[in-house]
Image (cartoon, rainbow, N blue to C red; front, side, top):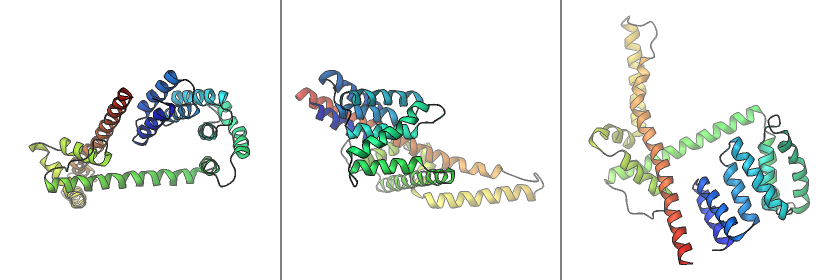
Length: 270
């Protein structure tokens, strides 16, 4: 295998969230073939994606190791800049202070209008956000996550209507998510959960009406002066949603495993 082969494997795994596997591939390539700027960048990105202090430290080590040999590599410079801009200036003042130097270096190497210059502008825009901009960004992220879950629920509902999942490539993440959901929702005692997934909107509306009716009934009966007990009707829906989230995690693990198997076969054949 070549450096490019390892880099391609890292890119594929990173796209499906296999950050641990990306680090393994990058480290294996560096150990087998020696230093390479692209593999150092993937190693750093896979650490930074975990968004934890220890991983950020390891990401910085990877970027520094690469830049020690390729000081003008734009991929490493921009990735390191993104890490520095994200750093807490109180907890990591040294890392945060390096952002200015990196920005100046990139400005010399990356002409205006280049992909690297665009990434720098995006990173600087993110770093300069205020409190309310952060709130809006988090709200937008949550909205995207809800939309993704709703789309996944629709795919599962269609598969439940058909009674089976159509055959698909083992590395097809969306199909793997549906297949995993069908497995987790299988069984006679999970029939109510399947019904909620198939009629998701109706289930939410009916549950909300039950919540209002239960709370009102408890208050009008004199049992309670104020009731929150009606919200317990949401438990089955939350369970169904948790099954869908669990299916997505399981599917990602399976797709990553399928990719790793293919990579191993390719390496063995080579």
